[in-house]
Amino acid sequence: MEIINNLIQKIVPNRSFADIGPCFTVVHEKLSIAAAAGASSLTAIDIMPKDHPSWDGLRDRLETECTMHSMDLLDYVGDPFDVVYCSGVAYHQPDPFAFFSKLFEITDHHLILKSLITPLQIGEFNLPNGACVFMPSLNKKDRQVFSEDWKEWLLGWEAAGLTYPIEWDMNCRNWWWLFTVESLTSFCTLAGFSVVKIHLVSEREVIIHATVNNFRHLL
Image 1 (cartoon, rainbow, N blue to C red):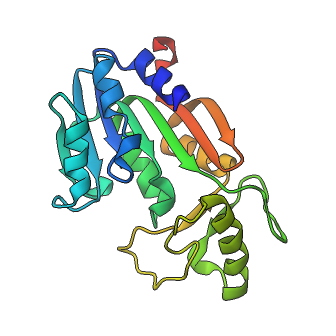
Image 2 (image 1 turned 60 degrees about the vertical axis):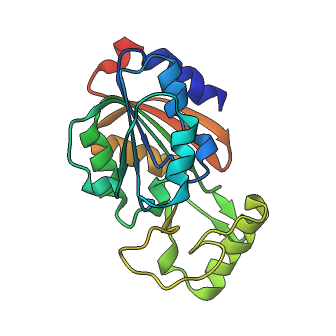
């Protein structure tokens, strides 16, 4: 996506870069963009098992060294990164505040967060601006309303917990949440980030650029 690529190219030269969740649809990884822009180091963190073929696909796309961690982000222990890119991960977290707090912990300068979001109107439901829909809490009838709406938008993609029911447990990484733009922004702010810019790509997709402390002057 051009917005993300341009931002990475602007802020990443001579800085460490981490891509959180690059293994699902590997073609959307941003490590190769950061490498071409002159990142000082590359790191990939993804919950995919280390023997999953996506890791080989990721290696095939990169022409430079990249440290790869097959783990839940919450289990990562190590130095923070100057620039962190995270796409399509937040709504899979049972504890979003723990997740955003971890993002803040591993980010030294810039966070680029890309996420799907929910429109404020879904069928008969009119959500307030700051709402989060907690999928396990919906009864069968209400979940069906959200399921049918998202099935149409996802164009055949299946989303566990959203487009079909599952047995929930705290270790699964399915669709726990539907966030609004305002709720995502609030999680960033509460975790300690300063939101620089919100790019509303569509009514169901957003890119949030946030910084730690007062690093806006580095833009």
